Image 1 (cartoon, rainbow, N blue to C red):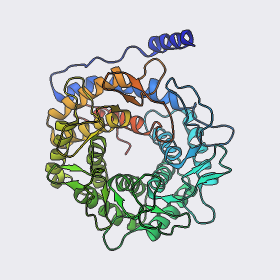
Image 2 (cartoon, helix red, strand yellow; image 1 turned 180 degrees about the vertical axis):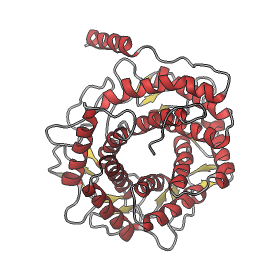
Image 3 (cartoon, helix red, strand yellow; image 1 turned 135 degrees about the vertical axis):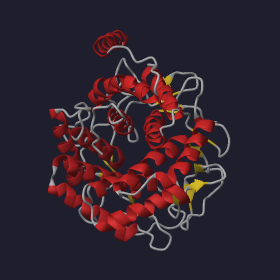
Length: 439
């Protein structure tokens, strides 16, 4: 086994080449341009080949997302809406990019059919949270909006990539269900945890994500905002634009604690923050929130300038408390106003840091964001990326050693695949670039 893995690593190294070691250039935009080939290589030769066509389940449909540390298929497993939808989204987004491959249409179609035929609740509408591998048995049926958000996100992106009217129609039905059953007309935002038939769960009831059913979270609303951004670009009805604007207000105001310029996750129905031991700062979510707000504003044709000071303050808070000034990259989390105390480096946090730093440079033209981008990228390409066996390691510990599985119900190619696509396209659009953006 060890000999086989070593040979695989040698072949991959000879095919792909070594990781980048921090390319330098004089001007910030030139420095980014110098990094673009390595970023594209990571996407083309490391991330895409790991997921496609490997993840496509040709027996039951959908995707097999259950792999160990070396990328080996693991026994058992289920299919959860979050990663099934995220993988459909990635295949569809790649189809609209300059990285499209013929096999990606097959992969996207397989994902859409599984969501439509196996994960959609034919009786009550919306997506089940989890089914078995064949999609024949529903394992968890409640309608948590975190999962519904990714379902909407995937359907909207797939309809844009393929032009299929049935995908757009299903997205319209899902949005109508979400809005009619979960929107809070009094305080804004959405009730997140609902029963299978879309009724409210009892206050304090446990949910799939952990927080009690009567709370609202920054995290779920972040991904609802992301989903509605793509849905609006897919030609959503006017109500979706209204709800997206409301979510921008929530994500830029209600969830951010001004004393620390950082977000906390849990809130009561009226958006009063729950500041108990659960009130931690997730640097990845704060960084992701910056660029997803910007993306939502652009979809709404609204200016970003009124938010720039807010974005600067939130980014600086994440950098001051969560950035590894020595090795590069961002730690996992910390208590508000203090340095990180959970210092593992999670794959998705690094991915969101890339896009956030690049967005901040686009908005401000300030070189410190390029510095954070470049140092985070160097850490990713030399340490977070598995250049022997493909994909990014789930986590890198404080000792610099990787750990975790390559694929599971919460880890697919969405965060890092999206970040690499965004980075290459955005760098090409900088002055002197030759690229195009495929929002």
